[in-house]
Image (cartoon, rainbow, N blue to C red; front, side):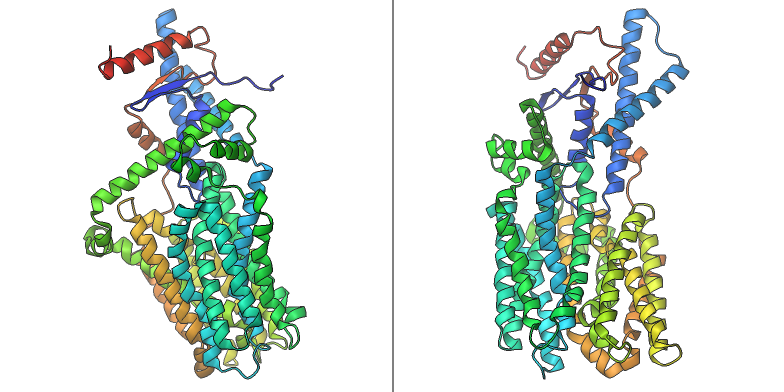
Length: 593
C-alpha cells in the first residue's frame, strides 16, 4: 500500500507535441533543461532555487485551473484567502516532492562516482607527489631539471583538455575515461623506471595530458549520469577526491620517501590507473551520449533503468524524454550563441572586440591569473623545499598543509552557496595576503618559525575559501551562451600557463629571494583584492523569483491540462476527454482538421 497519495496525471501541449507528465515530472523536466550537464561544486543553490521556482510556478497553474473548474461547476471561485492558502500548500507539496526525488542514490551511480573520483584522486596525487620526492629522487639533480620535471605536468594539461572533447564525442564518455586511465598507467610506469630526469619530464608531460583529460571529462561524465539535483553534490565529491589525492601523496611519503623505496611512490600512479580498467563492468556509459547518437537506444534505456533504480518501462521513457528534451533545449541555446557570434574561427577575436563583455572577459582572466599566481601550487609542488630549516622534518609540515587543505575544502563547500562569489574572493585574497606578510616576517625573524607554519596553514585555508573553487565556476556564470564556450577555453589555457610558471620559477624565487619568496604572491593578492572590490561583478546566481519569471516567459506558448497538484479539485474531470481536446487542437494548428 502506498504511503502517500499519487499525484494527478497531467499533460502539457507544446509545439513539439503532447507530453504526458505529472506535475512532479514537469518539475524534473525543467531541472533537466535549465541545469547544465556538469557535476561541479556550487550548483546546489541553483538546483534548490530552481526547485522553489518551479514549485511556485506549478502552484500558480494549480490555483488558476482550480479556480476555473470551481467557477464552471459551482459558479463560485475561491476568495483571496483561500487562494493564498492553497498556493502556499501546493507550493510546499511540490517542493517536498522535488526535494525527495533528489535523494535517490543507486548502487550503479555510486560505482560510477567512485570510479570517476578515483581519476580525480590520481590528478591530485600527481600534483603533490613530486613535493616529498624532491629530497630523495635522483640525488644531485639540479634545480633547473627538477623544476622542469615538476612543471612538465602543466605542459600536458592543456593538450589533454583539448583532446578530451574529441575523445568524448568519438569514443563516448566511458571510452574516453578508460583511455585516460591508460595514459596514467603508461605515464606512471615511465616515471617509475625512468633512469634520469629527462625521461621523468616526458612521463610527467604524459601524466599532465591524462590530468587535463580527467578535469574535463569527469564533470561531464558524472553530470550526464546524475539527476539534476545531485550534480552539485557529486561535483563537490570529486573536488574532495582531488584534494585528498594531494594529501595522500604526502602520507605515503612517510614509508616510501627514502633512497630505496621512492620509485614505489611513482608506481602508485599506474596502480590507480589500473583500477578503472578492473572496474570496467561497473563503468556505465553516459545515457546522454547514447541518446544523442540514437534516441531509440536500448543501451541508454537499460543504463537509465540501472542508474535510477526504475521498475517500470514508462518510468524509463519519461526519463528518456527528460534527457532528449534537455538536449534539444540546450542545443538550441548553444546554436543561438553560435549564430550570434558567427564563425567559430573568429569567436576569440569577436570576444576580445566586443566592448559589452570586456569587463567580464578581463574579470575571468584576472581570476585565473590570481588563482595560480597567488602561489598556491608553490606550496603543493615545493613546500618540502620551503620548510627546510623551518621545521625539523619538512614532510610533517607538507602533510599538515595537505590535511588542512582537505578541511578547508569542506568549509568552502558550506560557504559556497551562502556567500557571494565576489565576497568569498575578497575574503580569500585578503586572508592569503595577510598570511603571506606573516610568512615573510616570520622568516625574517620577527616571529617564531612556528608562526610561519601557522601562516602557511592559514594561507592554504583562505585559498580554498575562494580562489580555489571559484575560478572554475565564475566563467560560466559571467557569460551567456554566445561566448561561454570560448571564454571557458581561454580561461582554462591561461590557468595552465600560469600554473606552469609557478612550477618552473618558484625554486629560483625561493633560492634568490629567501625570506621574501612569498612577497611577489602578496603583491598579486593585494591587486586581486582591489580588483574584486572595485570592478568584479557579483555572480552568485539567479533568485527563485527571477527563475519563476523566466519559467513563465519560457512556457508562454505551452498549454497545461489537469494541473491540480493534489488531485482533489478536478478528480471528476475526464483526462481522456482533455487528451482528445489537446490532440484536436494540435491537428487544427497543423492544418489537418
